[in-house]
Amino acid sequence: MTSNPHTVVITAHGQPSAPAPAEADLARLASAVALHLPDWDVRSATLSTPGRLEEQAAGGALIYPFFMSRGFFTAKVLPDRLKNTGSRIAAPFGMDPGLPQLAARAVHETASEQNWQLQDLHLLLAAHGSARGPKAADAAEEFASRLCLLLPGCAVSTGYVEQEPRIASAAAPLPDRAVCLPFFAQAGDHVKQDLPAALEAARFGGILLPVAGALPGSAELIATGIRAAAVSNAP
Image (tube, rainbow, N blue to C red; front, side):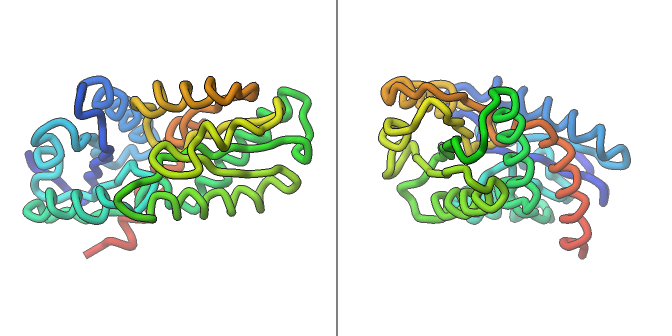
Protein backbone atom coordinates (compact mmCIF):
# COMPACT_ATOMS: atom_id res chain seq x y z
CA MET A 1 0.00 0.00 0.00
CA THR A 2 1.43 3.35 -1.03
CA SER A 3 1.08 6.63 0.83
CA ASN A 4 1.29 10.33 0.05
CA PRO A 5 2.22 13.47 2.02
CA HIS A 6 -1.43 13.82 3.06
CA THR A 7 -1.93 10.37 4.52
CA VAL A 8 -2.75 9.94 8.20
CA VAL A 9 -3.37 6.77 10.14
CA ILE A 10 -5.43 7.16 13.29
CA THR A 11 -4.33 4.38 15.62
CA ALA A 12 -5.66 3.11 18.92
CA HIS A 13 -5.01 0.18 21.21
CA GLY A 14 -8.15 -1.73 20.30
CA GLN A 15 -9.42 -4.85 22.06
CA PRO A 16 -7.04 -7.85 21.84
CA SER A 17 -9.72 -10.34 22.88
CA ALA A 18 -12.09 -9.16 20.13
CA PRO A 19 -10.34 -6.80 17.66
CA ALA A 20 -13.14 -6.37 15.11
CA PRO A 21 -15.59 -4.11 17.02
CA ALA A 22 -12.92 -1.64 18.13
CA GLU A 23 -11.47 -1.66 14.62
CA ALA A 24 -14.91 -0.81 13.21
CA ASP A 25 -15.40 1.98 15.79
CA LEU A 26 -12.04 3.48 14.85
CA ALA A 27 -12.89 3.29 11.15
CA ARG A 28 -16.10 5.23 11.82
CA LEU A 29 -14.10 7.88 13.66
CA ALA A 30 -11.67 8.08 10.72
CA SER A 31 -14.61 8.65 8.38
CA ALA A 32 -15.89 11.46 10.61
CA VAL A 33 -12.43 13.06 10.73
CA ALA A 34 -12.11 12.74 6.96
CA LEU A 35 -15.10 15.07 6.54
CA HIS A 36 -12.92 17.82 8.01
CA LEU A 37 -9.84 16.81 5.95
CA PRO A 38 -11.07 16.59 2.36
CA ASP A 39 -7.53 16.79 0.98
CA TRP A 40 -6.26 13.90 3.14
CA ASP A 41 -6.28 10.13 2.93
CA VAL A 42 -7.53 9.29 6.43
CA ARG A 43 -6.97 5.68 7.52
CA SER A 44 -7.31 3.77 10.78
CA ALA A 45 -5.66 0.81 12.50
CA THR A 46 -5.72 -0.62 16.00
CA LEU A 47 -2.68 -2.27 17.50
CA SER A 48 -4.78 -5.33 18.28
CA THR A 49 -5.33 -6.37 14.65
CA PRO A 50 -2.09 -8.15 13.63
CA GLY A 51 -0.22 -6.36 10.85
CA ARG A 52 -2.88 -3.75 10.15
CA LEU A 53 -0.91 -0.73 11.41
CA GLU A 54 2.14 -1.66 9.35
CA GLU A 55 -0.04 -2.21 6.28
CA GLN A 56 -1.84 1.12 6.58
CA ALA A 57 1.40 3.04 7.28
CA ALA A 58 3.47 1.38 4.55
CA GLY A 59 5.23 3.97 2.40
CA GLY A 60 5.16 6.58 5.17
CA ALA A 61 2.32 8.41 6.87
CA LEU A 62 1.52 10.72 9.74
CA ILE A 63 0.44 8.57 12.67
CA TYR A 64 -2.17 10.08 14.97
CA PRO A 65 -2.22 8.17 18.30
CA PHE A 66 -5.79 7.95 19.60
CA PHE A 67 -4.42 7.54 23.11
CA MET A 68 -4.76 9.67 26.22
CA SER A 69 -1.09 10.05 27.22
CA ARG A 70 2.54 9.66 26.15
CA GLY A 71 2.74 6.29 27.84
CA PHE A 72 4.11 2.86 27.01
CA PHE A 73 2.18 2.35 23.79
CA THR A 74 2.90 5.75 22.26
CA ALA A 75 6.50 5.98 23.47
CA LYS A 76 7.60 2.37 22.91
CA VAL A 77 5.16 0.17 21.00
CA LEU A 78 4.31 2.58 18.18
CA PRO A 79 7.92 3.56 17.35
CA ASP A 80 8.99 -0.10 17.39
CA ARG A 81 6.22 -1.21 15.07
CA LEU A 82 6.66 1.75 12.71
CA LYS A 83 10.46 1.85 12.48
CA ASN A 84 10.55 0.46 8.93
CA THR A 85 7.66 2.52 7.51
CA GLY A 86 9.16 6.02 7.38
CA SER A 87 6.19 7.34 9.37
CA ARG A 88 6.04 10.30 11.73
CA ILE A 89 4.13 10.22 15.02
CA ALA A 90 1.96 13.12 16.21
CA ALA A 91 1.13 13.96 19.82
CA PRO A 92 -1.64 11.76 21.28
CA PHE A 93 -5.27 12.82 21.39
CA GLY A 94 -5.33 13.19 25.17
CA MET A 95 -2.55 15.80 25.05
CA ASP A 96 -4.40 18.07 22.61
CA PRO A 97 -4.60 21.55 24.22
CA GLY A 98 -8.14 21.94 22.90
CA LEU A 99 -9.52 18.81 24.58
CA PRO A 100 -10.08 20.35 28.05
CA GLN A 101 -12.25 23.04 26.45
CA LEU A 102 -14.25 20.35 24.64
CA ALA A 103 -14.79 18.46 27.90
CA ALA A 104 -15.65 21.61 29.83
CA ARG A 105 -18.29 22.47 27.24
CA ALA A 106 -19.88 19.04 27.70
CA VAL A 107 -19.96 19.52 31.48
CA HIS A 108 -21.47 23.02 31.11
CA GLU A 109 -24.17 21.68 28.78
CA THR A 110 -24.98 18.82 31.14
CA ALA A 111 -25.23 21.16 34.12
CA SER A 112 -27.49 23.49 32.13
CA GLU A 113 -29.78 20.61 31.11
CA GLN A 114 -30.11 19.58 34.76
CA ASN A 115 -30.48 23.17 36.04
CA TRP A 116 -27.38 22.68 38.15
CA GLN A 117 -24.97 25.43 39.12
CA LEU A 118 -21.25 24.74 38.68
CA GLN A 119 -20.54 25.55 42.31
CA ASP A 120 -22.92 22.76 43.34
CA LEU A 121 -21.43 20.24 40.91
CA HIS A 122 -18.70 17.62 41.33
CA LEU A 123 -16.83 16.24 38.31
CA LEU A 124 -15.17 12.83 38.53
CA LEU A 125 -12.54 12.15 35.89
CA ALA A 126 -12.43 8.36 35.52
CA ALA A 127 -9.13 7.31 33.97
CA HIS A 128 -7.12 4.19 33.27
CA GLY A 129 -3.96 4.77 35.28
CA SER A 130 -1.11 2.31 34.86
CA ALA A 131 1.06 -0.12 36.77
CA ARG A 132 3.85 0.47 34.22
CA GLY A 133 4.61 4.03 35.23
CA PRO A 134 3.21 7.44 36.17
CA LYS A 135 2.62 8.97 32.73
CA ALA A 136 -1.01 7.87 32.37
CA ALA A 137 -1.99 9.26 35.78
CA ASP A 138 0.10 12.40 35.24
CA ALA A 139 -1.85 13.10 32.04
CA ALA A 140 -5.16 12.63 33.82
CA GLU A 141 -4.16 14.86 36.73
CA GLU A 142 -2.95 17.56 34.35
CA PHE A 143 -6.23 17.32 32.46
CA ALA A 144 -8.16 17.63 35.73
CA SER A 145 -6.15 20.74 36.62
CA ARG A 146 -7.04 22.33 33.29
CA LEU A 147 -10.71 21.52 33.81
CA CYS A 148 -10.64 23.23 37.20
CA LEU A 149 -9.62 26.46 35.48
CA LEU A 150 -12.37 26.10 32.87
CA LEU A 151 -15.09 25.13 35.37
CA PRO A 152 -14.84 27.72 38.17
CA GLY A 153 -16.59 26.58 41.32
CA CYS A 154 -16.89 22.95 40.20
CA ALA A 155 -15.11 20.37 42.35
CA VAL A 156 -12.94 18.02 40.26
CA SER A 157 -11.42 14.71 41.37
CA THR A 158 -9.88 11.66 39.70
CA GLY A 159 -10.31 7.90 40.02
CA TYR A 160 -8.50 5.05 38.25
CA VAL A 161 -9.04 1.54 36.96
CA GLU A 162 -5.51 0.27 37.61
CA GLN A 163 -4.20 2.35 40.52
CA GLU A 164 -5.27 4.30 43.60
CA PRO A 165 -7.55 6.05 44.14
CA ARG A 166 -9.83 3.50 42.49
CA ILE A 167 -12.94 4.75 40.71
CA ALA A 168 -15.30 3.15 43.23
CA SER A 169 -13.65 4.80 46.22
CA ALA A 170 -13.43 8.15 44.42
CA ALA A 171 -17.11 8.01 43.43
CA ALA A 172 -18.52 6.76 46.75
CA PRO A 173 -18.59 10.10 48.62
CA LEU A 174 -19.90 12.17 45.71
CA PRO A 175 -23.28 13.94 45.81
CA ASP A 176 -26.07 13.20 43.35
CA ARG A 177 -25.17 16.38 41.49
CA ALA A 178 -22.11 14.78 39.97
CA VAL A 179 -20.84 14.09 36.48
CA CYS A 180 -18.40 11.34 35.52
CA LEU A 181 -16.23 11.89 32.47
CA PRO A 182 -14.35 8.78 31.27
CA PHE A 183 -10.84 9.90 30.30
CA PHE A 184 -10.59 7.28 27.56
CA ALA A 185 -10.28 7.48 23.80
CA GLN A 186 -12.49 4.48 22.98
CA ALA A 187 -15.26 2.73 24.87
CA GLY A 188 -13.55 -0.63 25.39
CA ASP A 189 -14.04 -3.16 28.17
CA HIS A 190 -12.84 -0.77 30.87
CA VAL A 191 -15.58 1.69 29.95
CA LYS A 192 -18.28 -0.86 29.18
CA GLN A 193 -17.64 -3.17 32.12
CA ASP A 194 -15.17 -1.93 34.77
CA LEU A 195 -16.44 1.66 34.98
CA PRO A 196 -20.18 0.85 35.33
CA ALA A 197 -19.35 -1.84 37.90
CA ALA A 198 -17.28 0.63 39.93
CA LEU A 199 -19.98 3.32 39.78
CA GLU A 200 -22.65 0.82 40.78
CA ALA A 201 -20.55 -0.36 43.71
CA ALA A 202 -20.15 3.26 44.78
CA ARG A 203 -23.90 3.90 44.38
CA PHE A 204 -23.05 6.78 42.09
CA GLY A 205 -26.21 8.80 41.43
CA GLY A 206 -24.82 11.30 38.94
CA ILE A 207 -24.56 11.43 35.16
CA LEU A 208 -22.11 9.44 33.07
CA LEU A 209 -20.81 11.29 30.00
CA PRO A 210 -19.44 9.68 26.81
CA VAL A 211 -15.73 8.89 26.71
CA ALA A 212 -13.50 11.86 25.89
CA GLY A 213 -12.88 10.47 22.40
CA ALA A 214 -16.61 10.51 21.62
CA LEU A 215 -17.48 13.98 22.93
CA PRO A 216 -19.25 16.28 20.45
CA GLY A 217 -16.61 18.07 18.40
CA SER A 218 -13.92 15.42 18.87
CA ALA A 219 -13.64 14.60 15.14
CA GLU A 220 -13.07 18.25 14.25
CA LEU A 221 -10.54 18.59 17.10
CA ILE A 222 -8.63 15.57 15.78
CA ALA A 223 -8.63 17.00 12.26
CA THR A 224 -7.22 20.30 13.54
CA GLY A 225 -4.56 18.39 15.47
CA ILE A 226 -3.60 16.41 12.38
CA ARG A 227 -3.12 19.56 10.31
CA ALA A 228 -0.99 21.13 13.06
CA ALA A 229 1.08 17.96 13.41
CA ALA A 230 1.68 17.81 9.67
CA VAL A 231 3.29 21.25 9.83
CA SER A 232 5.37 20.58 12.95
CA ASN A 233 6.45 17.13 11.75
CA ALA A 234 7.25 18.21 8.20
CA PRO A 235 10.56 16.75 6.93
